[in-house]
Image 1 (cartoon, rainbow, N blue to C red):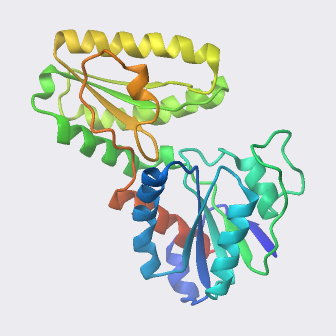
Image 2 (image 1 turned 180 degrees about the vertical axis):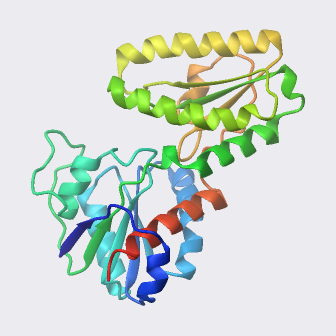
Image 3 (image 1 turned 90 degrees about the horizontal axis):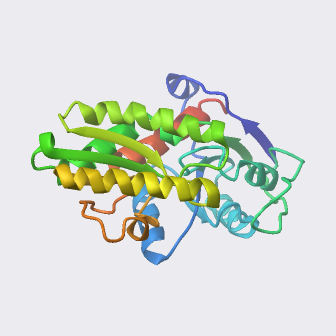
Length: 275
């Protein structure tokens, strides 16, 4: 196995290098119930028209990753790009890097017993952060527009998971504010971003109070619209917002053609570095 950390190559180089019939794509995803997983499969299925594609669910689970890699090799893939379908490429990065052989040092904590995969394929990893991509803003804008009736009376909350680390959480918020600027062009009364920080008790308690206060005030002045910035689904937000008046379709980013396009172009950029 040869592991390559891709640092970014113009997609044009892919065409200059020529095409290969031995490329494959491994998508890493959080995983959830049957309905949640189906949203991810719907997102990646169009890629199968061009390449062998497999999805490994389970938050850095060596068993599902090994199974998916084996299936890709059985389909003839000898060069496989690993695409983490998380908002941040740092999510589960330590465990995934160890499992896939990009690092020989296991992380201090993992949700699963760790082991390294066995594969003859060359593996590539992209460091791109989904949350920073402009396509995300376009998806969020489309979700809001589908719910909007009179933007001048509507306040939009873009709500995401967030992290426990203050510096990383601030980076999430900066990316979210960039997307909020795109939505603001539609004339909403206000567009706010926030992170629930749902896996960290102290920060979450403060975030819940802040989030509920915004939605309550927004609904008193007009209409509150809540757009989840999640890979898929509405997460725990129904419980967090219980008893409040707001509009939401509960849709995360998946499925959407722009998310599929992000996966494809990220894969092509990695493939261009494998000559």
